[in-house]
Structures are given as structure tokens and as C-alpha cells.
Amino acid sequence: MKQRILIVDDEQNARDALKTIFTEEGYEVAEAGDGEAGLAALSSFKPDAVLCDIRMPKMDGLQLLEKAKQEGHGAVFVMVTAFGSIETAVQAMKAGAEDYVTKPIDVTAVLARIEKVLEKRALRQENELLRERLREKYKFSNIVGESPELQGVFDVVVRAAPTRATILVLGESGTGKELIAQAVHESSPRREKPFVKVNCAALTESLLESELFGHEKGSFTGATGRREGRFELANGGTLFLDELGEISPALQVKLLRVLQQQEFERVGGTQTIKVDVRVVAATNRDLEAEVKAGRFREDLFYRLNVVTVTLPPLRKRKSDIPALVQHFLERYGSMHGKQMKGLAPGVLNVLLAYDWPGNVRELGNVIERAVVLARGSELTSDDLPTAMRGPRPSDRSSDALIPGASLYDIEREAILRTLDLVGGSTSRAADLLGISVRKIQYRLKEYAEADNAAAQKHVN
Ligand SMILES: Nc1ncnc2c1ncn2[C@@H]1O[C@H](COP(=O)(O)OP(=O)(O)OP(=O)(O)O)[C@@H](O)[C@H]1O
Ligand SMILES: [Mg+2]
Image 1 (cartoon, protein in one colour):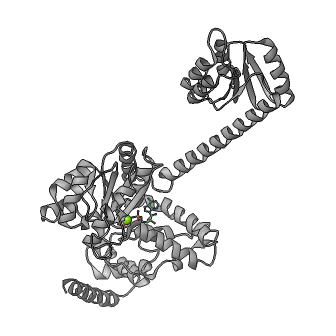
Image 2 (tube, rainbow, N blue to C red; image 1 turned 60 degrees about the horizontal axis):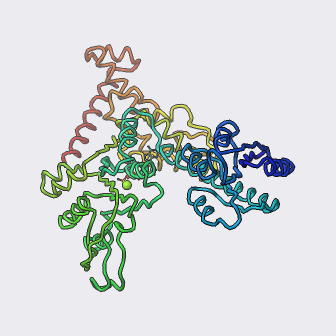
């Protein structure tokens, strides 16, 4: 596509000369004889670059430049100044011009300048586009799930992310708390600044303190130099405090102060350091219960709890399972060089029937393992862990029992349900099932023994 140049100059001769040259060089050219006409041409012609004289009647070049920036036209400006008026040139650059040339115009130089600024502009646009795409992609597309529960979470994230509000992310292990923290950062105005993560459970109290706030040289044995803490590193950005429920009472006090005043001192230091940090905290503990039990400061809890996002366990939003399975099949398929088409019949039912105590992380692990083991391009129930396929005797009401259950369990289910149906009559049940009364009685004894044993185990 041809690049468009708008030439704004009050001298007809100059315009004509420039127009001829740029047209010859393959540009599409429009011209205007003063600032006002130039402004109109910006809207109608939509140039990529403007070669703009400064001294002109009606509206001069600087005014045109300013108006163009105000109105958000994307064209780059190269200004034409009278020889020796360097001040005007500087003024123009400050107002957002990309470059300038002096009169009398050197045609070759002008062509080269224009070409260069257009190249720069294209690069900028490309970068912007890439960043935009990355942002879009990162935003939520790696958080999979369409359940109303998860949509509710997204809704809170979208509304709270642009603010400075502290966000508390709650949920069992593996529900995606860290993903949410990243999403908050990525959809906030701080996205270009650091996202810093601290796992509060991974360090001892004193190490965690210096990790968070930094330390001065010699503040403790081994502190050979000054070190900046994570709060300083996260300045302007977001600090993710993972497993926050684990921090000691003394650190809770310090944390409260930073959250309230955005200031602190390094360990062993006296200088007060100011920071601008947005905090997202996560825990799989029930913080309210911790507060009641006196292990977590109430004031800190309220300070953190400005906005709370609770990620429901996977078993409470099983409608997310199919999309998550698809997501993990693609991810691990390409990671392990296997083109996965999908699941063999019945496998999804096994996945839906399972309880997922390890939540999405466990599902991801199960799918990764299955992808690695799969012989073909479909996952079969053979590729799932035996425990998942194994008997689930307690699950009596499940209609999805058959795929993945043992024949023993299916028989048990059939016998018990048929007995229910016929009001407990073993002879009628035997008729319906096509087995002997003795077999039913024998099985019932077995079931009772097994249940007793299970109950016994439970008590111990
Ligand atoms: N909705 C989701 N879509 C895609 N991947 C997810 C989703 N939720 C979680 N995951 C994946 O599951 C794994 C666990 O998620 P994450 O680390 O965010 O959990 P967590 O709640 O922080 O767990 P923990 O409390 O154990 O630290 C990660 O690999 C993450 O990418
Ligand atoms: Mg985590």
C-alpha cells in the first residue's frame, strides 16, 4: 500500500516541487495551502506523514501540529523551519513533531528524513500491536472456564484491577489463585511495571522479613551488603504475597504499616522508604477462622480484605472440566510433541465423576500424564491413574458409575437398587436380575462386612 504524505505550505511553488518528487518516489500526495486546510486534510486524507511549513497564514504550523495531536491523528510531523530559527524547531519537537528540516529544502535530505520517520512509526505501531495482542492473550485467555462461578470471579477482577485496591484471593490449593493475581496485574495500569511474587510460607520469619523489606549491610550475620526488598523491587507495580496466612504476628504488624502508609524501613535501617505498591494476597487458609482463633490480626485482615475473590473448588464447578481438559490437551500435546484429538468415549464421564481434591492443578497433571502415556491421538481411561478408575463404593446415587467402575461395584449397585425397587424382597429381586436368591443373600452379607470394615477404618 502506498504511503500518504500531506504537504502543508503557503507557497504554491514549494508545494508543486515537493509533490512532484514524492509522487515520483511512489508516495500518494495531498497538499494544503494553510493550517486550516491542513487540518481538514488530516481528517479526509488520513496521511501517514505531514511535511509542514511553520510560518503560514490563518493557522501556523505549530498550531496545526498541536491541533493534530489533540485530535489524536496518528500522522508523524516533519516541520519545515526558516534557516536559523532553531528555537521554533525546538518548540515544534516539544509539541510532538518527529523531526524538522530547514529552508531552503534539500530534496534528497527531506526524502530520507520522511522515509526514516515513517519507518520508526511503523515499528512503533507494530510494537504497540504486539503488546496489545500479548495483553489480550494474557488477560484471561490462559484462565479457562465458562462456569458462572468463574465468570463471577472475572467480573470482580475486571472491575477491581484498574484501581489500587488490595485484593485477597481465597481458594483451595490448585484453584488458580496465582493466575488470578497475574490477571489483576496484567489488566491494571501497572502492567508495564514489575509483578513480584513472594511465597510467605517458604521462608523463616527473619528471612521473610528481609526478603520483603530488604536489609542494610551488617544488619545480621551474613548480611554482607545492602539489599533491596521485594517491596522496593515492586515499586510502581504489583506485589503478590502468596500463602499469606502463614506469616508471623510480628510480620503482620509490619505488613499492616506498609499497607496503610506505603512506607517501611529496611531491616537494620533507620531511613524510611516510600513505595507505591499494589498488593494482591492469596491463601488457602480460612482467614476469618484464623482471626477468630487469634492467629491472624483482625486489622490486617480488614486491610487486606478490601476486595475478596474466592475461587470455588473444581468439584463445585464441574462445568469447567471439558474446557479445561481441551486446554490441557492442547498445551501438553504440543509440549510433548503429540497431536491429541480428544477423549475416547466415556473418559469425560470418569473425569466428571471424580472429586478433584487437588483442583485444576491435579486435572492438569492427570491430563499431562495421560498425554504422555497415550498410544494414539485419543486419551483412553487406561491412560488415567488407577485410583480414578477404581471403585467408589460410597457413590451410590451416581448414574455415571459404569465407565471406570469394576464389575463388582456395578453388580453391587444393580443388586441394591433392584432390592430398593421391589421393597426388599430377595426373591423378586432374584427374578428380575436373573440370579439365585442364595447369591443375593451371600452378596448382601459380603457388602455388610465390607461396609463395617470401612466404617471401622474411618473411626481409627
Ligand atoms: N482456570 C484455569 N485455567 C487454566 N489453568 C488453570 C486454571 N486454574 C488453574 N490453572 C492451572 O493450575 C495450576 C495451579 O494454579 P495456581 O498455581 O494458580 O493455583 P493456586 O491456587 O495458586 O495453588 P496453591 O494454593 O497450591 O499455590 C497452574 O498450572 C495453573 O496454570
Ligand atoms: Mg499458588
